[in-house]
Image 1 (spheres, rainbow, N blue to C red):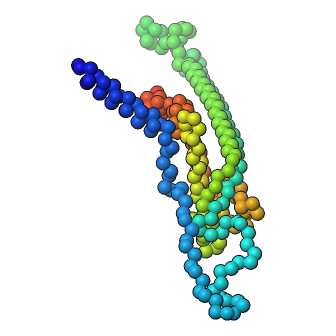
Image 2: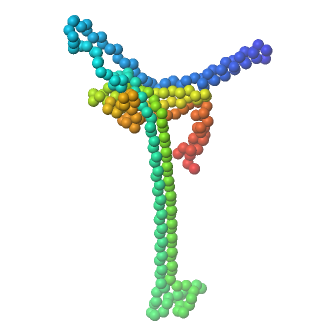
Image 3: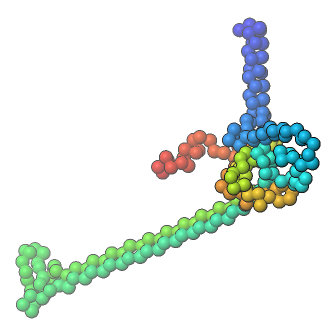
Length: 239
């Protein structure tokens, strides 16, 4: 291999490594399902012809900053906290005992001689008595506990105003930290009565809420099992 060929190979490898590192550090694409919407272009009011008040005027004398139109921004304060505990225990025990007494025939206990198999009296070889005993025990215990907590805030867009005045909102926040990226996604329905004067609402007051929190990158990959480990932990592994 000539020096020129080696140089081209090294340059190609360096370019590939640079592309891979750039792809790892680049911000991931946003999920279209949580994309915001732009507000509708307001319709210009017709020219006032000299009257003090005009019916088509869009001037609002008293108005707060709370979201109420498509495209407005609303702040969702995340105050999620769940704690679930479940336990189960089962204990069963069963015992059986059967005893068959050797019967008397003509006032004499029936017994057999093991050598001739003939009924003989006053022998101690074999008889018809029997004892049967059985016992079974089972004990099972199970327990499960799960605790989750999520705090913070995320800004969402109003994408639809329902006929009853409720607001359909959705939004996504992407955060790039060192070699990883984290995202918070939220979608749901908000009542205008629950919106605070600072244009915020608690996540516990969001109906039909879908909240996702996750991450991508080197740190997230180090905390996940490989495909072979996931196979051994899956129901497909019979042992």
